[in-house]
Figure (cartoon, rainbow, N blue to C red):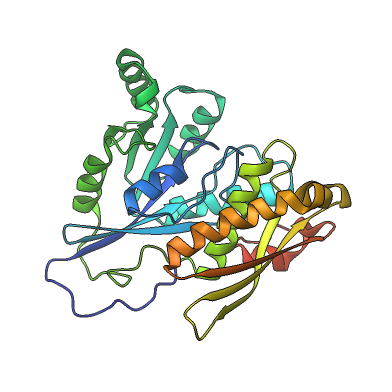
Length: 308
């Protein structure tokens, strides 16, 4: 992984390393990474498979800098975009110092989880198990699940958390802070992510798009930040384009008399203003781009390798 130069000065005895969060779609990886980092770096929606590229969230804990890699959910790929996301997820796991497998405690060891574990068994990287959603799962169920999972793969440690409310997160941070290698920090101390603001802004709008239209719109829709202009009055003007594959999808995004796109724009603008701590003027456009999922340039923009 290419790394930026570390900021100086920094305290002695520092540690830094990468932790890959992997799991099936909707296991709660994005919610957990936002809890670990303490701010929003990854989008969370009802739709499965919303994390496309590797998003790195950076947490400071004691003298350790923990770089969490929120990989796309691992599933059985059917289309080119699916294959690119799954390949990216496994690449992120292999490059990490520690792999954390996140399992939805309500679903347990279903077919998706078992398939991931079978492949994980061949990777030599240290591995931990995180059982998520303990706020809605009974303790006996959690203990049985932990035992069954560790019989398939002997994990170095097992954690039980609620990514939604943060229960158990401190124990995870303590553990990883002791596990990552000694060495200088890899990013500035106050930087929560290596995701450029233009891309984060596009991800926020994509989140609002799916929150509003998660039943009507396929997840293959995408958002790109076309312009980012910082104005003299301290505000930021942002122009974004929502790309869909068909005219019928464009009508869904716009909504009757433009009401849907207005609601999406309002929700995204408010969250962006909070994140960048400045007034935001957001302008959204909707365009049809047929077969964009077969365009190599789109994959590069999302940080994915284009599968041949």
